[in-house]
Length: 188
Image (cartoon, one colour):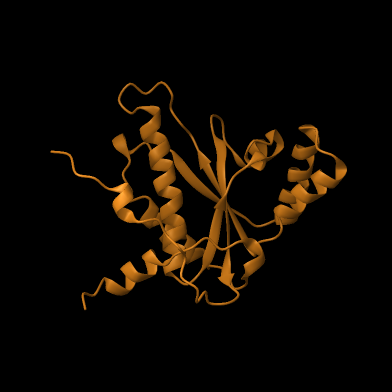
């Protein structure tokens, strides 16, 4: 057996795990930093580093911002309360923040977005390989002005959240995947 085979098997069996299926413990700061260090190895044309991550320590405060944001977008009180609860469901929450340079003549916007996606996926995958589970989510909460003002610097925006923790139960059922041959071709 090649020494990378267990990692390949783990990657092939990965699945998103929703917040209600996660519990403590959560990663230590050093584990988050290791995951970010790995994510910074992903392709990044001209080393713009267009993505960063923020660990949310006060999810109750984030929940209030979610509620304000939902109300500002016209949500009912019931819908705003539901939005608020989404911020506090996971044992740990990370925000992925992007700063896209739309005027860069050397690095097209789509390449910068690809770097952000690779960065976020790499953070999640690294933490999963450490034994944690999670799910990357987006939606209207990434657009709430109050949330973006609280977490972002000038020119930045929230692109996704990572809900994270330790899976409550080991998943025994294999996840059905499409046939990879339908997503691969050879051009000659």
